[in-house]
Structures are given as structure tokens and as C-alpha cells.
Image (cartoon, rainbow, N blue to C red; front, side, top):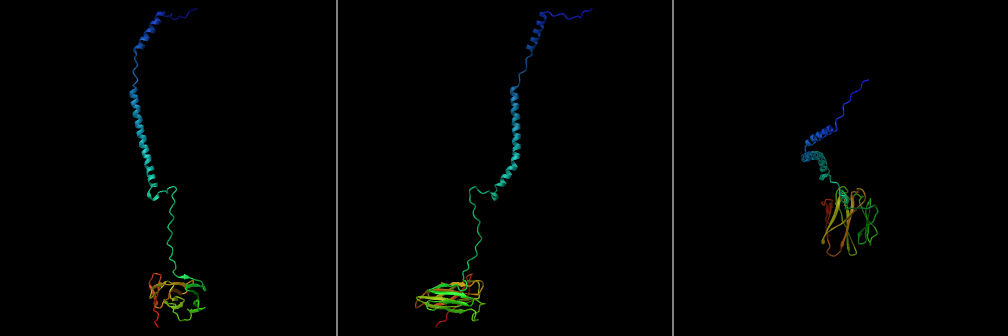
Length: 234
């Protein structure tokens, strides 16, 4: 029976010698220093490049946003300030008031000095403290209702001189002006509803011995004279 050969154990002093040799070699290997400063500088450079890239990208992104913001606050589209009350819209111009008073048939109108006037389709009616009823027809054929004209009726009531009359031939009467020795006075006007083609005027003035009525003039709504009359002298 054969025996397997084994290496003979090394002497103790040989193992110690090898360990000492390996230690000497390890001590001779000096590791190179880590370049910490260079690594830090490189890191800062990379961060700066990354920040610059982000700034450019953000700038490109903000360009359209800035454009949108400018359009949103342009003068033509400024949003109202919170709490500010918006001015009310300007109302359209109101139509000019009719200078002629429109009265219902039979409606009594005070003409001064206790005189009352009322209108019907037949003509002008009036009364004074001394007379109950007087009448001037517009349907008897004595008036031309197709052409502008103006008439005059005078009455003394107490210390007043009451002047009145018919005007005809216009639906655009604006005023009747009476020229007296004391100056001009503007009369009041009245008519029936619709377009009757005639109406009345009336005014009263203080009475005195030298008072005269020189002229009665009918004007349209533009102020132009369209008819007039001069009272006959006795």
C-alpha cells in the first residue's frame, strides 16, 4: 500500500521572512493624491454650464408668455379696476319737447285774468268772467286750413289785456310772438291730438291807456317766420 506524498511544512522563520518581504513592497507603493481641487473646479464649471442652459431655456419659454401678457394688458383691453363703478352709458339724445300743448277735446285751459279756453273739432271756445261762452269756428269755410295763417282776438278783463287767436295751416308751429308798444311777448300754444291743422294761442299783458298791439307773428320750430298779421287801426 503506497503513501501519498505531502509537502513538508515550511519552517516558521521562512513564513516570517515572506511576510516581511510583502510588507516592505506594500510600504514602497505610495498612492497618488486625489485631485480634490481639480474635481471641485470641474464640478463648478458643469454647474455653471447647466445653469446657463436652464436660463436660456427659461428665456425661450418666457418670450411667448411675455407676449401674451402684453396683449392682455394692452390699452384696448384693460380690465376694470376692482371696486370701480363703471360709468353709465350715455343716453341717446331725447327728442325735442313739443312747444305746443296737446289738450283733449273740451279740456279747459286757463288763459289768464279768469279766461278759460277749450277746443273741439268745430273750433275755439272761451269764456271770461263777464261772458259765459264765445266761439270761433274752424269748419265754417271762412279759414284756409291748408296755408299758414294767424288771427287775433282782444278782450279787456279787469286790469289785463287778454290776447288770443287761431293759427292754421301747419303742424310745425313753434311760437307766436306779439309785438306791443311795451315790447314783444311770447304766447302759449295749444292744439288737439293728431294733426288737426290748426291750434290756438293766448297771452295776457298789463293794461294801460297807451298800450298798442302792432304785430302778431307765427314761427315754426326752427324759429323762422311763416305767417304774420297787423291789426287794423280804428
